[in-house]
Image (cartoon, rainbow, N blue to C red; front, side, top):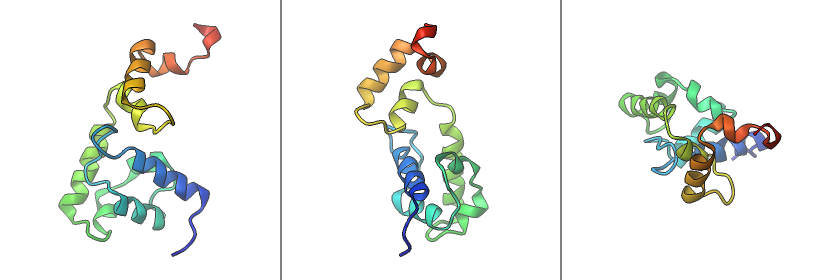
Length: 120
């Protein structure tokens, strides 16, 4: 197995952080699929998962056309989520579900959260 670059590991870790019911909930985007996507150079950064096409996924091991379609639909659906789920899905250290909900409730929007404190 070839050595992974820092970018590949970051992409893999980022995509893996978005899996599951607490994150964005990408159905079918499991660890083995993430490994294939990174190893074959189909994703190089986290936003790369949103550029994936059904044909690219269907050509991977253990990924039929219907499974590929389901993953793409789940990715499309994940573009519309709550601020709390988005913050939790980022996988920030010490930011669990409760903290993500608290941050979302306090700031109300991503723009407010990202604004420098001197602007508030």
